[in-house]
Each structure stands twice: as structure tokens, then as C-alpha cells.
Amino acid sequence: MGLLRDRIASLGYRFLEGEVLLSMPSDEGEKEVRRLSVLDMDGQVSEIPLDSSSFLFPMGDSLESGDLENPLPEDIVTACDAIYRDYYGLDDDGYSMLRFHCTMPMKAYLDGEKERIGLIGYKEGEPEGFFARGQYTIGLGIGEMDIGRSGDGVYLAQSAQALFENASVLCMYFSRMPDRQDVEDAAIIRKMERDFRLKRHQEIFICSDCGQTKHWLDIPGSISKKLRLRLNRKCGCEQ
Image (cartoon, rainbow, N blue to C red; front, side, top):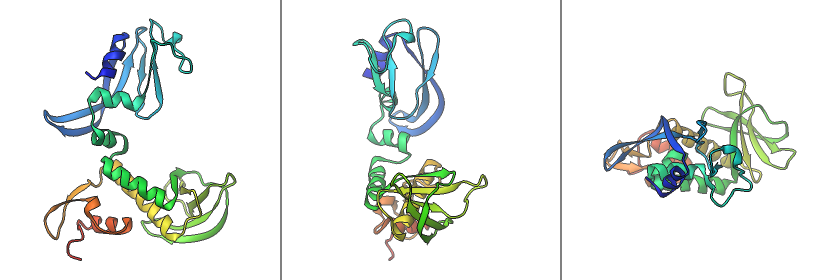
């Protein structure tokens, strides 16, 4: 048991494990990380979300006595993802795999690329209303994207055509007006994060040219070059 798990259990709460979220190798073999819920003293079960939001464990025999804004000294208020990390004894890479579907170095690389191009985030859903100030044609099956600025001052790139059967569009948000390469790189970041989440590609692969085990980050060059070579199972050794 972790220290946080012990403290929470000492108040009378009991953890329940649900569906498998992640399987990873460990010294004891395969380690499963499951979705967590907590059973309180009143018999109420609350699921613990896998995010950084706060979760309150009030002292006493009723959750009604708990106040997230004004907790008592005996209450425990902690981040939900901290509970998962403590409960399963996850190291930095294990935590990053659980939360972001990639290791800490890969997450740091993608975050650095987002900062470089000013990418704030992206979504797939209803189109945003704005006046387009330009248009770029990019790859990855997206095609034309309108570029502009929303009413609240955020710059965005939005697919001109619906990409999905439910008429949703791809919209990417930026801290500054992006150029075509920025938009292309943002689409690559989205693809990489999606591929990791869906387990389409692993960070480690065997190069089809040299036969050595390589990592995404071993591939030289820009993010677009890394993606192009990785999709062909190449590390750049034969260039």
C-alpha cells in the first residue's frame, strides 16, 4: 500500500478496482492498472476520474459533512491522478503512460513541439463561427483548413470539410496566427497522440534497414520527418 492509500483507508474508505486501463511489465510480471472507485461508510460508490481534478475524502460517517472548498483538518483532499499513482506505485513513465499514453520523454517532446508552434489544443466537433483570413492545404487526409481568429481572440485552423460521418470538423487552436507548416505540424501532433492512445504504434520499433531497436526520438529531424520515417519503420540510418 502507498502512503496516500493508507491514509484514505484509515478514514474508513475502501477502494474498488474496475476495468483494465493499462498493462505494463514489472518485476513481478505483467502489471495491470485498473479504474478505481471508492466505497464510503454509507455504502455509496464514487468513481475516481483519471485526471488532475481534486477529490475529497471527508472524515466521519457521512459524505455530506465534506466541503471541497472548506475541508476540515482531518479531511483528505488530493488530486485524482495522485491516487492512481500512489495506489499502483507508478514511476514517472508509468504515470505518463496511464495519463498520456506515452513515456515522459515522448510527452516532453510533444509538449515542446506544441509550445514551438503555439498549439493550445484541438477538438473534433461542431464548427466554430469565425471569418477566415486564409486557407492552407495539408496532408494526413485533412485537406483544406480555414485560418482565422475567433471572437474571443484565439487563432484557429478548421477543416473546411467535415472529416467524420457525424459532420464533425477538426478545429485546432493557437496562441498566434499559424503558418502552413505550423498547421501541418499540429495535425501531426494530433495524429501521434491519437496513435499512442489507440495503440496503433509503439514508441520503440525495429528499424527495417539496420535491424536495431530504436525509439521515436532517435529519428533525426523535424516532427514531420520523424513521422514519415516511423511509418516506414525506418530510423534514418540509411539516409
